Length: 230
Image (cartoon, rainbow, N blue to C red; front, top):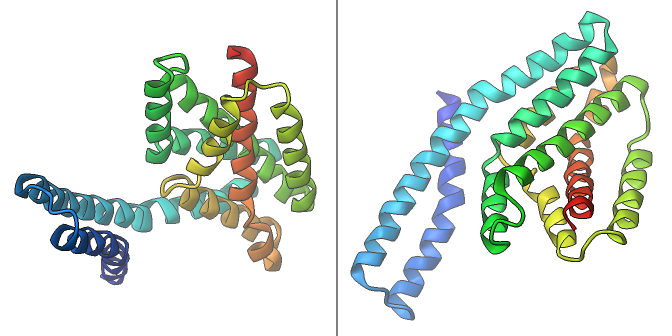
């Protein structure tokens, strides 16, 4: 019951400001036709319901599952299993990420099919998978996060020099959309679960930073895609 109240408040505070601004503009400046305004109100109601169900599902399903799996995998004593399944989960949750699909659809439309929707989705997902696996390796070996982030962005800017210019902004947007409501909760929960077993008292330090590291993967992956397609 507490989760339902918390999610309801979160959705209200997320949607209400947008609805309020549109309504103020409607009655002061814009004056949209009544049918369009009614469509907006119906859309707001549907978005609110969808967000409520989505966030509730993440709260009661995805977060506990990710943390449980993250806590169980290290107990197998097999580092390769932690890395493999960390990367696999990174791939599948990114494929399901709504933000990634929106970006891929827009790129497909603007490029007139030159960059197919599903090619971009799977490229971004593969980039996330590889870097989530790398993040799991970082937790296991206790590698400082700054080294991996610095090395990753050095590769990004070096590779950008050899990639067609139109792919550079797409690559950075690809890194941004992976921080959506599907990918972030699961990856964070997975990382905290792994770190709580392997690192103990430093779990709060080692379990975070995964999203920052995972976001580098799609940038590099799309830049490589630009080299191939370009």
